[in-house]
Length: 120
Image (cartoon, rainbow, N blue to C red; front, side, top):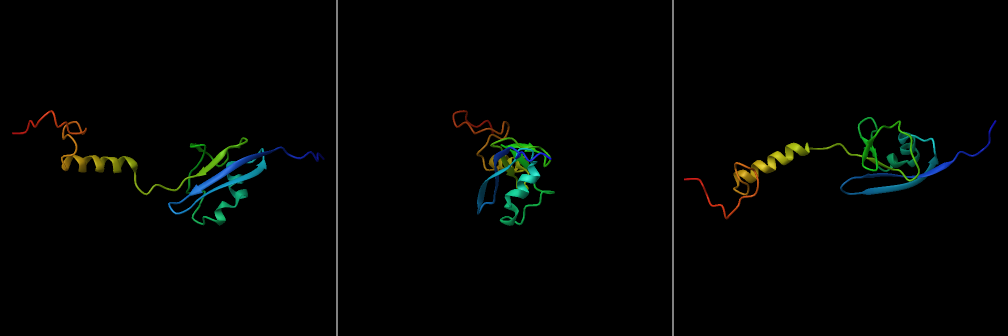
């Protein structure tokens, strides 16, 4: 039986809401997975809404799987679900700008005051 201690790595687990953000620095065995590290950090006791079957995760802003193994100084990020599709929000904002005259109705870009109006 080998009693050699397993090498350890230091990682961060982060999660935030509009009201509160937490960054936890923990030390785990070097063969830990993303899921094991999240469980070891106990961040779910602070944020009860975290559900790893729903929330996506990443390492340093890149999508990761719960089964991915970690490297020293990795930063695990737990993402909140989106409440609105960013593409749809941009489309609605652009359409509103066109309707209000703040955007060119043809190109969608800013209105050029030097160009003058072609509408008659």
